Image 1 (cartoon, helix red, strand yellow):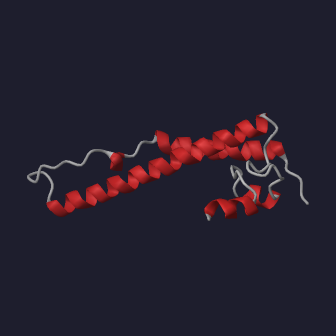
Image 2: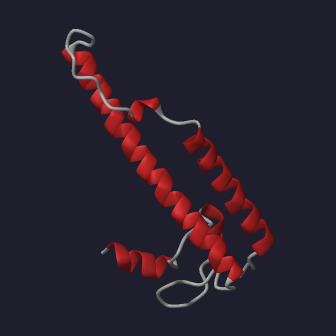
Image 3: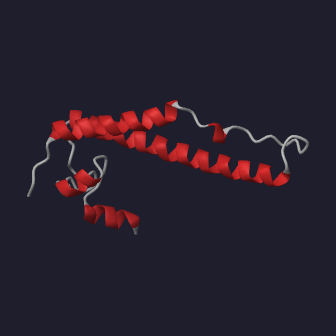
Length: 115
């Protein structure tokens, strides 16, 4: 079984966090309030804007969740708990951590949690 390089995982998590924070910092005008004045914007244009607003808000929620997961993973590295399943405390497969460095559960516990 492969071992986990905590230094590389920390760097990767920090890079992912920086990317997500950069996206958040650029701001998303699509999430702005949709103008309801028909004299300024037609009905179909408003509907498109409302759909874009909903998608932007969903994207913001996903980005915020990913940032929380990354912060938690960095804390687990500091606490020397990184790479251990939060449910069964068994080591998480390093390949799984390479794919998603913020993952909380081993594949077995993740499967059980989804059911």
